[in-house]
Image 1 (tube, rainbow, N blue to C red):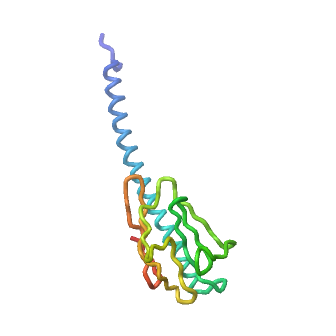
Image 2 (cartoon, one colour):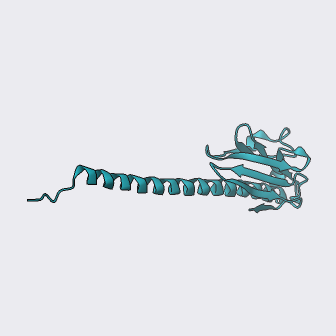
Image 3 (cartoon, rainbow, N blue to C red):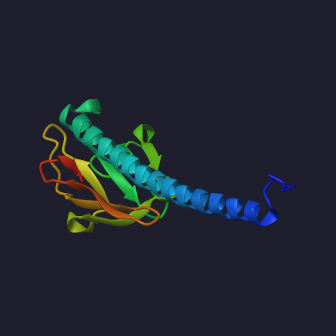
Length: 153
């Protein structure tokens, strides 16, 4: 009488197929996770720049507002004042990039490392682009225009 149970070889083949499928699915899921994380980091940075522009236009605390980019600490700071060095530090809001995201390039007019939006008009002279990089994807996240607007790309 023949047994209907799986032999060891058949069981090993089934396990190998299962593991191959699981590794492919896991790889795809991780890729989607990192792409999504890059997109969210870009949207949060875009929102912070738009907020600084809005605070400057609305003259909140009778001040200009800006965002300073710190490539060493992988962070950016929303601040109140006409410059990062002369800002009102009690109003600082610091945001950190996720561990899987970093700056690829911060290219702003005049080699600036931050953007200041003028009080009342919201204009800036520090226009340019900010590029972030994820695990395997480099993406220009936004452009800052001279009129103070930002575009998410």
